[in-house]
Length: 149
Image (cartoon, rainbow, N blue to C red):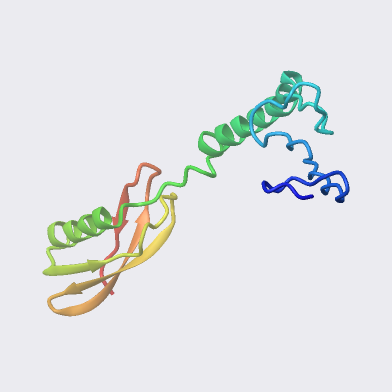
């Protein structure tokens, strides 16, 4: 006989086994559950001796390059003329020393300040284009302006 509430009597087949659940995986973040093994060795920090052994010579090398580059012989400290100031200076020399009617000057961009170096500047004197030669006379940036060609 069957029970009206759905239960089986002894002659019926037994119910299927309930599903078995696997344990939860370890958390992704935070500490692992006690007793669980992640399979990784604990991470060690960087040794201060290693940092000093590698970092010390690197810092020393950078300091040497900066000292040699900026002070002596100064390969990082290249002195150049300010182009706008140079052009004003050439125009002043042409007007005041040579008494010329100069109105435009165009010099190269940032020529180096090296004693005895020369470069040319284009000028317009009385409406005609001319060229003047500029010679650097001191490491402080003094220069001479030649007569226009």
